[in-house]
Length: 477
Ligand code: BGC
Image 1 (tube, rainbow, N blue to C red):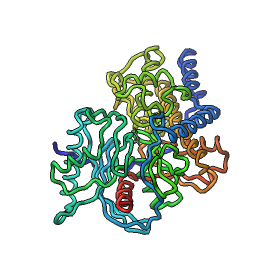
Image 2 (cartoon, protein in one colour):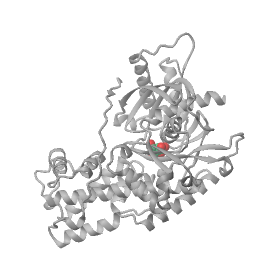
Image 3 (cartoon, rainbow, N blue to C red):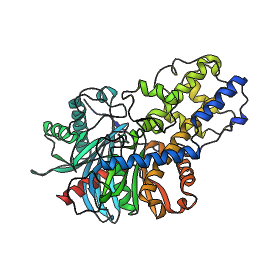
Image 4 (cartoon, protein in one colour):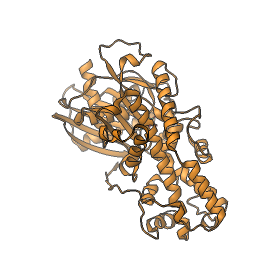
């Protein structure tokens, strides 16, 4: 299979244009009541946010004690902090988001990094086919990257590669682990319980590529390391994109399940927090979330992720819209063929709708009429759609705030200067996601938190992080 490179694009981020439900001219009392109910169902009040945070901290504690808990709290085998002086050249392969990326990373010291990268689209069949084909495709992409960038390896030497594999993996060393479960629409057969590094190395060997997989790293851990390279006070790496998760620096003495030996005092923990509240005791799930969960490839799993991450927000919104349509409270009860299909309401449309501040909501109209093929829409339709989008988007940001607050409280990091490196399309592009998170943190900790804690975009951090991890791996060995 020939991989198709994708060009990178950067869209400037807008702010949310807030729509006050009181300013909507409702078509009927029934519509007004239905909207009021949705506002109630999707609002995460400050009390709820604090309750979720408290429950989250308890789950963290359990995961640090034992394997197999709801929060996996995976020990990453990455110990010690970076100071930006590290130097070396590595390859990174980043798999687990919408695209696959191959990156060549040159760490130049002094916090300076130079990278070259190519993105490739992973087709849907590969995600749910057999594991060997998926890993062969990864090797093809690396091969084509080496050609494209004329990276030549002489003699018997090998290029060291950091492998960012952004799924729950129980690590057994810095370059070994077993896949616990697939997430984010991947479900390739024959991988659960197996080591992704062995699969990748075999695929490289089959193509005779001079590449050695030196480190296995979760994208959150990579993001933390990449951000720390320029901001040594970094204490967390967070992904808010197709999926969601976080990693933070934990004291070895708190990781009571750790049986290994190490002189290190700290280790990065990959929390796998998307799995939070499997027990469904604290998250404010609605019937629209349940409907989406049932139809997903991994029902009953990754409950928090499904309320926060970009892969799911559009589908939740679509479910709400369909419910109003079926009750003849929206679009006069008519649905377009496009909206009738699962996953057609993309989270990227939500960003555009959130930012739409025109009196007639013309950007919203364009999405509904040109992209989703509604023959016509009224201003009331567009206002109701916008309001629903706001509810789903804001809930996601506030739930993210609850998780971040849990980590900040558990570590006490909010009381000192703490940098949080965040990567992912939601954080980068979704209007006001960052401000909503900060507002949530302030509700928990008070205004002081704004002075201490900074949220920074660690764009494409996981590739650089994987390279840093490969460097650390060679240091340890
Ligand atoms: C995976 C995590 C990953 C996150 C963000 C989740 O589905 O389980 O390992 O960090 O997505 O990519």
